Image 1 (cartoon, helix red, strand yellow):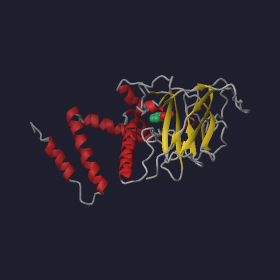
Image 2 (cartoon, protein in one colour; image 1 turned 180 degrees about the vertical axis):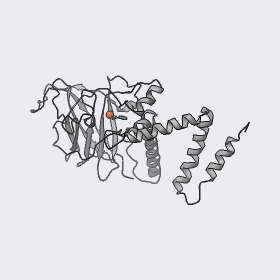
Image 3 (cartoon, protein in one colour; image 1 turned 135 degrees about the horizontal axis):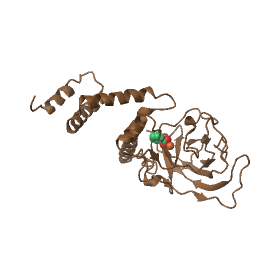
Image 4 (cartoon, protein in one colour; image 1 turned 45 degrees about the vertical axis):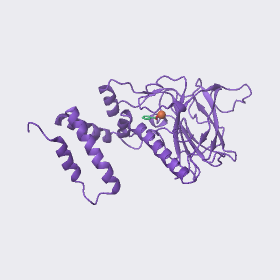
Length: 306
Ligand code: BEZ
Ligand code: FE
């Protein structure tokens, strides 16, 4: 073939999709095939490169387990999880506009566009603990202890009792609990429930920037692209309430490195927060290994249920 008809070939592959494909598959696969073929033609991909990509995915699958999802990590380094988060927000905004046009209460605009990716370090089964208590379960004597507190509002703007706040962040060594099984379970991770006024609070640490795991395929890809693996310092939150859509976000320290070049592209301007010095009137709690030196107040308004 001196002058292959790539467009006709792509059409043949798309036309092979049968009538029994689901409505969503009928939308997704033609678009996937169209762009995948266009990418391969434009980049002039060789069979050797295709096989290397397949090997990379197989390898990523092999090193994945319930503590580590290397495939998600690979997608993160390509910006895919953050792009999905942006698409989810845009979809929610369209649904809210439609509901408002039909006379329903508009969704909370504060919740839309304030979400962020969940990442691979979320863990289920974390026990609930009383408000104001510490999630630091391993001695961290010189760490920047922080009193974090806030109010969770419902989509109607009223304080929301009984919302569950899941919170997790890295330890001062830049590692999550799942990466340090020698430390007590759930170090720097906790669950809190809002009181009758929608308020919750916890003792956390001001987090530190850290590299995403780069010892396997995601790291190999970063090297191929001459990129660093670092994320700016952040706290993860997942807020649940039975009458609302659950809400996943991250909040980033305003003085952190890597805000402009997050390895997984998750930073949004409205998620950057300032840690303030703790007030002199704050009563230092018993039973922690250091001194609370910062205060972080952050309220959230949850999106309405769909
Ligand atoms: C995280 O923030 O925990 C994370 C997100 C994406 C990739 C790796 C880590
Ligand atoms: Fe993280």
